[in-house]
Image 1 (cartoon, helix red, strand yellow):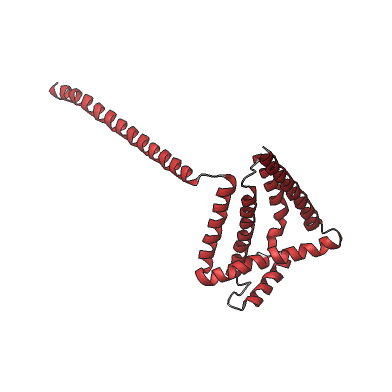
Image 2 (cartoon, rainbow, N blue to C red):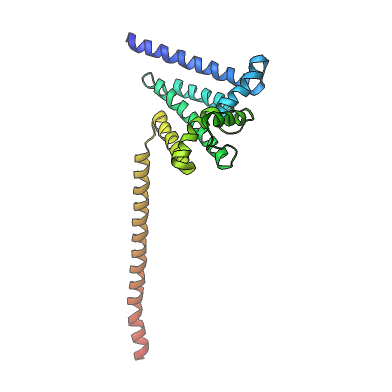
Length: 212
């Protein structure tokens, strides 16, 4: 029991910290209040890119989800997965800039990171973090491959965080599709049967008309 209470206390402290940090980031990023806000917003843009505007909201919603779910066992891995989602959204934003020719990934890494930071301070792309991961991936598997990998990792992280069951969803969808197909096939058979019966019943009438 004491261990369970200790884990619950850690969860409550973590949730409280996340909520306070999310509110503080929202004030500093959105209002740029004070010296810290004026300098933090461009710096965060350089590091995270445009996604800096989503971080406070996403962090606040995520902290509420952890508090509601009361998961004392896996909340730390879920926080890590949440960070992975944000990072790979940055990668996707960086892919967009590279695809449009705004960043040249054929140059050396220092030049690429400077380009990413400069674009990020102007609220473009995924900042230093995004281009740091995107550049080697793009050079290795191209923009389409990097996009697929990033979306796949985000999807896997969402499955872990929210306990989704994609296999069950796919299986249920296939079962429903098969049921609809079987129902349509049965309806078509019934229509054909009725048409055949109508044709059979109409044959004697034609014979009587001919004999008369």
